Length: 361
Ligand SMILES: Nc1ncnc2c1ncn2[C@@H]1O[C@H](COP(=O)(O)OP(=O)(O)OP(=O)(O)O)[C@@H](O)[C@H]1O
Ligand SMILES: Nc1nc2c(c(=O)[nH]1)N=C(CO)CN2
Image 1 (cartoon, helix red, strand yellow):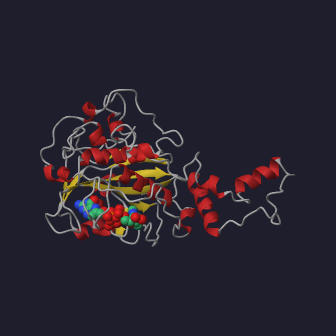
Image 2: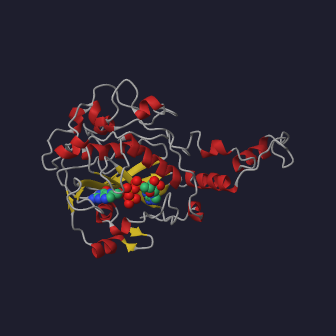
Image 3: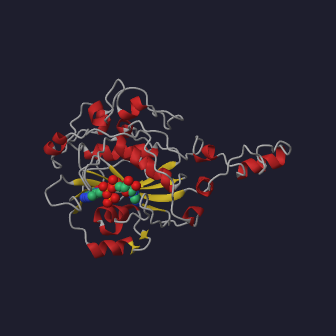
């Protein structure tokens, strides 16, 4: 795993987590999905067959697209959950296509793939991530009077009108140091994309479609490129009493991102919510879970975003797929992932060779 030094490591991230919609979410899970789930009765139909007809979705959402509460919360004219949208059977994983071997890397396969846009159908509408390049992100919000780009431009091209920027100007508000740090961190990551490893898991609904939808939604995020996708694993629920939950499907993706860690977390949580994840109990069954395992070599004890993920070293369902895509991976504070995995064992983690996640184009 690449480990460039970067400014984001200068301290724990302290950005406020924003729940853009707030409010309590009613229980939108469909318990029957769990009851009817049979992981070995996957039909052989492809996701492509289930894709709605029509023009392809744009590769990148325009700024602000999909932000409205109608789209985001499902109050609009149509159903929003991917499984509902197609009237599909939510308790069923449909293999996308066969393949053997390890994880996929971008560019490993491309030309002439007739099914390469299949995953678009799984994409939920997500809000624009904050802090995105080109968007009204942290840079635009900060308004820091001594922001470097502003200062540079003024110095070279507009030397005279500094009225709003002099320290004595009463209209100039002091900018909290935390905001300054955020803007600096965003500046740094914008010019220097960071690798991050995300863990995906889910044990409700159509598990494979949900994971694929999460991968596609991440790829649709400005400032995030999905570089590699692991094999798919069926895993015993970890951290709960045996036989109290359906088995999970788990996978790991490697991304390169210009988003700061906090914005990546926001996006991960937006993906979870778009798939109707509900949080009723710790480690409860869920449609999709997206955790940040590592972000570069950042180490942070902030409970809002702990890096590396505080339980990654205990979880074979994270480490095993991670090794697919990064055999020499290193978990800061724990050592080589292969060694950590050897220490905890792989019980309850079985590769599903018949299932595959597609790396977005
Ligand atoms: N590395 C991280 N990745 C994702 N969430 C994190 C991370 N570190 C801290 N958190 C915080 O953990 C909180 C709970 O996350 P979540 O509901 O996904 O937990 P969980 O998946 O049920 O359990 P676990 O955290 O053990 O995986 C989130 O609100 C988030 O702020
Ligand atoms: N097998 C498995 N067990 C879990 C998982 C998961 O993704 N897979 N996620 C959890 C909370 O993040 C708790 N337990």
